[in-house]
Length: 265
Image (cartoon, rainbow, N blue to C red; front, top):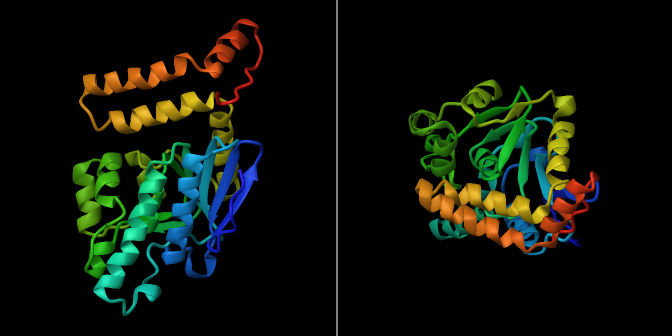
């Protein structure tokens, strides 16, 4: 797929089907400003609408200090109420586009993820992190509150009571704690973080892309339903795959004892 140049993102392919996306404002710890919100909104929208050969993405930060330090408070200093709300509307659309991206997105948290940075990682499907990474949902210290789905995604990841403690006390926590609570899937050495995230991304990309996208959708939306309604949704997603060429290829390859050649059709 053809992507435009993004002022705040560094985007490159890793192999045929995986995209690496770096938040690229390292001098300000990859803080989220209006331009980054516009860039990420455009990127995730394009990937959802026309993924082309892309089957998975890995989101990380440039530099070694931070994944994303949260909203750029220097840009926000002196903003009028109307300008703040208008900017946040772009943030909201960007977070939603990431959450609803049809391709799986793995967060490779290479450093601190605070405020909107943690919320961005939480909008990914799952995350790996370096041991040095610190996390915090600390907005209440600034007179605001999480506004990038933090009060929704964090309790879904760590439970209501722990999320209340972390948000209301603005308590920072470590990668080890995040892993123990189920928020981080794997803690990786800095030298191998991207390699391990890409290894998982390549494993995902080797599977049937339509099946992966339908399974992702079924898990995400099914968790918002009761069990039987979620199961009915699962079957609707399942049945859309029955007539696919990839389903025929998968069964044929299994019986012929060879690696399948999925085309997303």
